[in-house]
Structure formats: structure tokens, C-alpha cells
Amino acid sequence: MSPDQPRPTRFRATLDSIHASVPEAVTVQHIVVDAGSTDRTVAVAREFDCDLIIGEDEGIYDAMNIGLRRADGDVIAMLNSDDTYLEGALETVRDWYEGRKSSWMVAGLRWIDEDGRRIADLPAPPSWLTVEAFASLGWNCIHHQTSFLTRKFYQQVGEYDLAFLLAADYDLLARALRLAPFDRIDRTLATFRRHGHSASMQGAERGIEEGSRIAKLYGPPSKSVRLAYRWALKSWLNAASPGWFLAKRRGSA
Image (tube, rainbow, N blue to C red):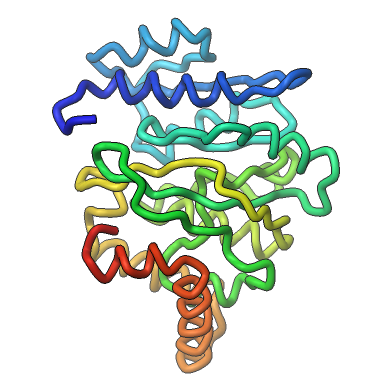
């Protein structure tokens, strides 16, 4: 896909990936929150019979909170308009839900570039991950695109904190991990399009500040212990995904 391709085209790919992945005997309530876009986003959402909410919001995390309040399914997930599910993703979620040990699950994520080319697959983080280690890392290694929480668990965790401009998902998942460990699924379920317009690629200084805030909120008080956790977790992530590690070194991730 070229950089000048209209956003609704990518959004249609997102919707296609969701609806094509719905297994038998499963109903998907697909909520789309739109803050008054002037392109064809709303028209495309209506084509797919989405549960559409139109109105002003205070940014992406506020839009997610709005969607959360509307959701009435057993399992809730978040997928941005540039992201897609891979084949069989929701079948995996259904199978997990039927035999779940925890109230939430985390799977692997595929990073793709602007044109949809694969950069690398990142597995789900280790099952031994604690909130202290997670918060000490300084960035979110639990992929929100492949995190699936039961609605009851979301109610316990709470909404996205709008005080975080870039790291509200990091904060929310830290709260989730503080409440319960996740079921780790050793499979890649979704794609994340990595490009210069991604929120994670912008506001690096703000991102570092918010990561430090999360470390102080949920990590151990000792800076040396936080550093040890950070080193151990980074080492695991790099070893588990050498392709991602090399892409980072080349500057393509």
C-alpha cells in the first residue's frame, strides 16, 4: 500500500480481517468510534454493519473508553484502523475462552511496514512476567492488538487513564497484570503497521516520561532492581524475536 492511499482503504482491510475471522457460533459486536471524520470511514463502517458511535472525543484513549462503555460481549479487544487480524485469530480466542485459566490472554504480534511488508513477528511476552518487571521495562511489551480481556475483568481493571497521552494502554495493562497473570498464547494473531504516523513513533520524549511514571507507579522502589528487571526482560524479548532485534538495529523497526 502506498503512503498516499486513502485511510478508508486500510480501514476496510481492518474490517475485512475481523469479519472474515469470525468462527461459527460466535457473534462479534464491532464498535467503531469516529470523531467526525470527513473521509469515507463512516460509510465503510456502515457497509459492515458496525455499531457506530459518532461524536467528539479527547483522543484515541477516550475513544476506546467510549467503546468500552458500549461493549456488551463476553470478551473485549482493541484494534486500530491500521491493524488487522490474521487468519484464524478469533477461532484462537474462542478456544482460549472455552478453556481459559485466566481472565485475559496475550498472543504474538506481527509488525509490518507502510506497504504491508512483514518486518518481524513478536511473540507474546513470557508467562513469568510480573507487573514489577513489566513496569520496569519502560515501554509496553504486551501487545494491545492481541490482548483479549473478559468484559468482567475489564470492569475490574478500569478505563484508560487520559492523563497518559501515549502510554495509557501500558498503564491499563499494568493494572491488569497487577490483578492477574495472563494466559500466554504462542501464536501470532494480528498485524501492527509501523510507520512515521504511528503514535509510538512520535513524541519520544513524552513516551519516555510516561514510561518512567509507570515504572514509579507499578515497579519496585529500588532503581537498581528496576534496572535488573529491565535487563532481564529486554534480553528475553531480543532472544525470543531475533528478527525484531535485527530490524531494530537496522532502524526498520
